[in-house]
Length: 88
Image (cartoon, rainbow, N blue to C red; front, side, top):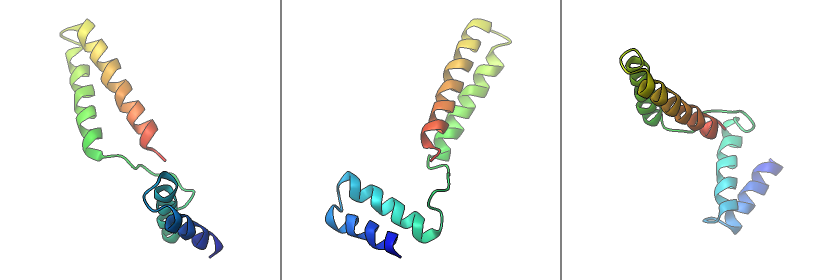
């Protein structure tokens, strides 16, 4: 209850600032019982597009090894970076 009050006070004092926005997110997680638990906060559409590009590059490796391998490393790396940044 004290944490909810503290987060709400931050939201009331700075509703559109960085601290207020982050406090609002934490307040929602706290009320849902998910505060401190990690979860994917990104877009599954982005994951799907990057996944298709990565798999497409994998298929190209058999025909054009140089560009296929480059694409596989490039798109796979971006996909991994996206997951790493959006898994909070």
